[in-house]
Length: 334
Image (cartoon, rainbow, N blue to C red; front, side):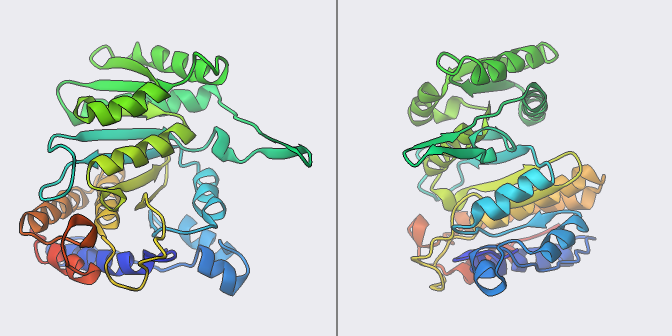
């Protein structure tokens, strides 16, 4: 799903990388394009047509570009429809980029289906609006479990930081915090820390290198991961994944950037890295070692391109979007 704004440009650059992946590895991808987003709403009358949902349902995974004002009708709906409960956002310092430090390597694990983003809103009267924040133990357990499992797979010194505001929202965030503590008992090899969300926002700026895995609720995760992205060079450097038990959707975490759409200057790193996350997930889900190797190759090719000075406008360079895709693709190797 190319999406809106700069989405089609990012998609074109990413497809160059995926084409080279198929040439270098024993992987055959059947790539089917579907409609969704603001432009689709204009031309089709709906932002997410039924045939798009049917096509996604019949696929092994979905890779989508950013969508604009219809995001709640597209990505939020898909998360709930396919129960993509784990919002995964890895943030890492890459060479030759404006990251604030060279040693940032954190993973946001965001509960993706509940909280305020569930959109349960109503009007009491013309002057009073209410939004319900629904938090359930089951959703807290599975996102906390995902976070602890992720911590085990990342590094020797394993740490999970649970971010909440249980001192104020004692029922909802209280349930989230206590559930994280309960899940932690099954992972004695992983350290659990806790931070209130305002303190976490401060510590991200003060010492981002200290974070490993951050697990939190839907709204907090959205805001804090955007903050974290700016520490590693901007939203253009940040991929995202929406993962469920049986299906997953991958995307850049940024918006459509309409001010630069069509100019060929957008940074496709976020979507290229998202395609790598997709291949890594497919490799794990279907025990396909070729997909796993290909995912590593994408990140390595990206690193080598950045080291060689292949930089888009936001990174201080002049390389166009399509040329960036070419540069990463030509560095893919098995």
